[in-house]
Image (cartoon, rainbow, N blue to C red; front, top):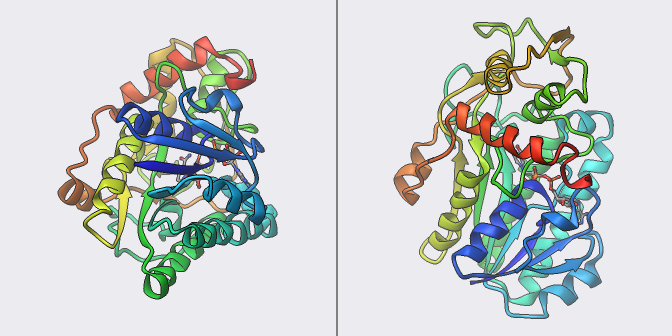
Length: 325
Ligand SMILES: NC(=O)c1ccc[n+]([C@@H]2O[C@H](COP(=O)([O-])OP(=O)(O)OC[C@H]3O[C@@H](n4cnc5c(N)ncnc54)[C@H](O)[C@@H]3O)[C@@H](O)[C@H]2O)c1
């Protein structure tokens, strides 16, 4: 396949580009490096520095080859930031994603894979299936839902085939790539920053949720498993016209469990500072992942919590400041 991949200088896009290249596909990464790093783009990928807000640049890049599929990772991803500045999110994620979908259509590319999120769902005490109640708790989740809906109408009107992958929490590292957001709001890298001496303690947002230990519960998927889900979803698009899949393990871990695992892996006491709830955080988001396992044969290989935290720790110890070293 010839793949056009937006956001490939980021954490998940870079890992997926690497997985695609290792299976013999050709990958062009398109990224403005606003939140990503040139070093995170695999060496064998073609790199185009560009903004998805720029329709002319997008059209030029997409018409440079006949691409078989667009993987669209480029987005702003911080739920908290989206609550403070939703306008930024609606522009960058919704309006600019429309540019990407439209440019794909005009270029004659027939398949599209969207990075969506568990944040489209309402918090639930039960595992979330693809038909569970949709009710984003934050503007970020709402932006992803809007892109999903655009794809629905592009399928109807123009025949664009698409797969939506609703990721739960991407986590862990490969030997040569890991999670490096700036600012970092994700729990595992923040906890590891405490073990590295870069933070004094870990702020635990919300200790009064109706969960067994009072902290939020999330479903963590190792990026190697997440990357593999993309490869399978793109291949399946050759037979199917549309698909929506949760990409999660079905197992929830509370924030306190994550901190405990990080203490075990790093040997550091990792002091905790209890803080009020953060706006936009749902209490519990855990995947029902039967559909992707059954239909695509996806089976997570690396997503046990000890493997996730150990792999992240190995990477962060080697690159304490991520790609900014
Ligand atoms: N990290 C997670 O746990 C998670 C969970 C669910 C969904 N997702 C989705 O997965 C995708 C990738 O997430 P990530 O963690 O790798 O994020 P990331 O911030 O590491 O990567 C996003 C990339 O998009 C690029 N980008 C942003 N706006 C752009 C623009 N206007 N033009 C060109 N490039 C632009 C950034 O420079 C960055 O390289 C996102 O769409 C996100 O919504 C992530």
